[in-house]
Length: 187
Image 1 (tube, rainbow, N blue to C red):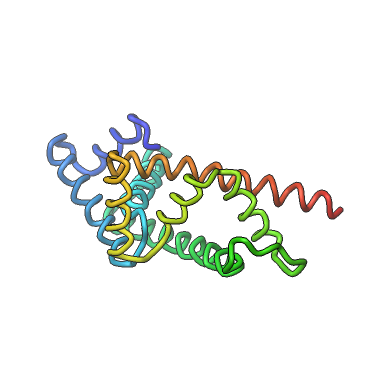
Image 2: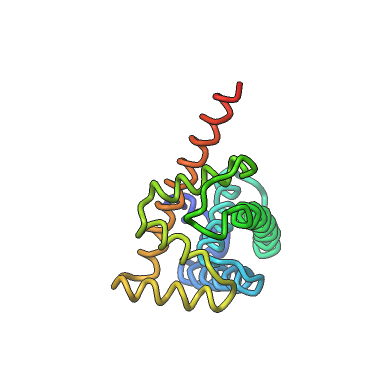
C-alpha cells in the first residue's frame, strides 16, 4: 500500500505544482493500466498500482530518478515478468487438477494439486466457485465477467477485487501450510 508520505514525495517528483502533479500521476497510472491491459493481464489497475507503489518506495528511499516515466516503464516490465511467471505456475496447477471433480485422487497426483483441491474445498463451495470464476477467461472476456460478478453481488468492482484478494490470500496461505506439512511428513 502506498503511504501518504510516499505519495507526497512521488507527486513532488512528478511536478512541483500540486495540481499538475496530480494530473501527471493520473496520466502515468492510466498509461500503466493500458500497458497491462494490452498484455492481457487480469487486474490491470492493481498491477498499475503495484508498479507505482514500487516506484514511490524507490523515491522515498532516495534513489535518484532522472526520467520517472522511463523508470516506471522499466518497473512495469518487471512486474509483467512476475505476472507471467505466476500465470505459468497457475496454468500448471490448473492442468494438474482432475477433469472430473468427483474423481478420487490417485497416487500420481501432484502434491501441489492435492493441496489446491483441499484448500479450494476448505474455502467452501460459494467462495471456491467465485475464485474459479474470477480467474477464468482472458482479456476483454475476463473484464466483462468480473463486471458481471460484481453486479450479481450488488457490489463495486473494487469491492469484488478486495474480496478476491482476501480469498486468494487465504487460499495461498492454506496451500503453503499444506505443502509445508506434507514436506515435513515426508522427512
